Length: 160
Image (tube, rainbow, N blue to C red):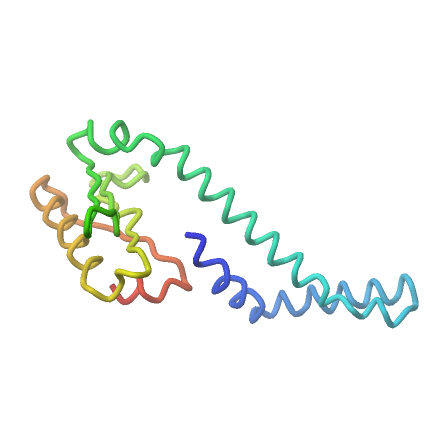
């Protein structure tokens, strides 16, 4: 998850509201101090980076607390969920999980979650193989659909 901070930050800087915010802060500082130094609002850019980075750190910690600290309990003790790892030379290089969608619906789809492949092992078909494993699990357990939620900046995940 943490690898997405730079992409999300750069995307945020392309949004019109971010431009308006920087302009507004610059003008407010200029009007309040009448100093050209106040037009240095781009100093806020590193602060924005730190804010986004801390948001991601909090998100990762929350995800760990909610289900990844105890994979056995969360995924392996239930029949309708599972967790897989891919190994290479004795090291875990990829993970994926499957669990019922958290949204309560009449026919709850299976959620493919936590699909992650180590950088050094990407573009080798590991993510595709793990995805097929989840699809097979879904078929065996009678699910009619599998969902995968991918962020806007995760182009690799979107292609998958």
